[in-house]
Amino acid sequence: MTSPKFNKTWIILLLGSLCVVTPFAIDMYLPAFSKIAAEYKTTTSEISLSLSTYFVGFALGQLIYGPLLDRFGRKRPLNVGLVVYIVCAIGCATASSLKMLIVLRFLQALGGCVAQVGAIAMVRDFFPAKESAKIFSLLFLMIGVSPLLAPVAGGAIVAMLGWRWIFVVLASIAFVILTLTFFFLPEGHKPDRSVSLLPGSILAGFAAIFKDPQFLTYSLAGAFSFAGLFAFVAGSPIIFMDGFHMSTKTFGAVFAALVMGFIGGNQVNVFLLRKFSSQQIFLSALSVQVLIGLLFFLGVRSHLIDLKGTLVLFFVFLSCIGLTYPNAAALGLARFSSDAGRASALLGFLQTGTGALISMGVGLLGVQAVISMLSSTALIALVILLVGKRSIGETIESEEGETVMH
Image (tube, rainbow, N blue to C red; front, top):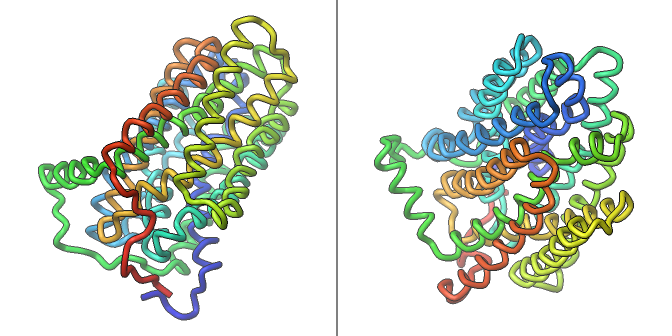
């Protein structure tokens, strides 16, 4: 049970701080792509591979931390992972080659991923399943600080100190978050020694979760819907800085403005949940996302979309993802409480792994791949949802008899 001196608001703030670790690691160095490319004498598209490898490390690391979070409690793996993140961030600041930067970004993600997967698991530790979608939306309000501040801050750091200082700042931010959570975040899950760390048992545990029809349907549909955000993040420097010739400062402002759509969708979701179920919101938002993706694809192919049209379509598209993500996560995790760490890790692996593949496609294929992936991933998500719902039967949005930690 949580100590009485800790209230829900404090828990949400601490979990939210953990959730911004990876978004800051991604968004803050986006405006520096052209500067990094110039120093390493390469292209912006190749620099985006350092982003893709971060996504890969983030996805794989979650599978590692899932069982550890259930076996040893939430805080011990969290502390170790954040230390690894900090050390690797400092390493990125001194990387002498692009290959070294890519490797260090992968290792940085392996450490830092524990922050988000741990925070998601602790939502199930401290709050009932029926409140999960609302709590996820509130956490995304804090995540929204990243795309609003990080690109602008990154651009300013590049202008004043150089791109390497971005990673020094990232290490400093993570150190502050580590200190706060170490001293003030309560342990939400007692260590469970019955959780085996043998590879066979770990794989069997993940397989049992993966076979659950509700988890499988909403985690996969949510992953492909969410992949559109990865395509946007990986492709936006190429589209706006290379394609529309925006300056670093202008790109940071445009990026922040567009991601407001994602943040706004998350916050609108809090109000929609008062009248509609997570299932209804997810299906409606995903349907609109598919429509916008198709309009985007057709408009680009026919050369009918200019900068203004691109901005409008991106904004609406990201708003839809802001609605689909928290509801997909809540529905996918609704059946799990005692093994929330593993379920959260598998959910994150599917989402980030799908996004990593999409972002790698952007890095390898360039700007032309971005719009195609935006439309195709949303359509795949809708097909998965419609097919998967047939095998779920009655969808559970909360567990009977569950208790909330106070």
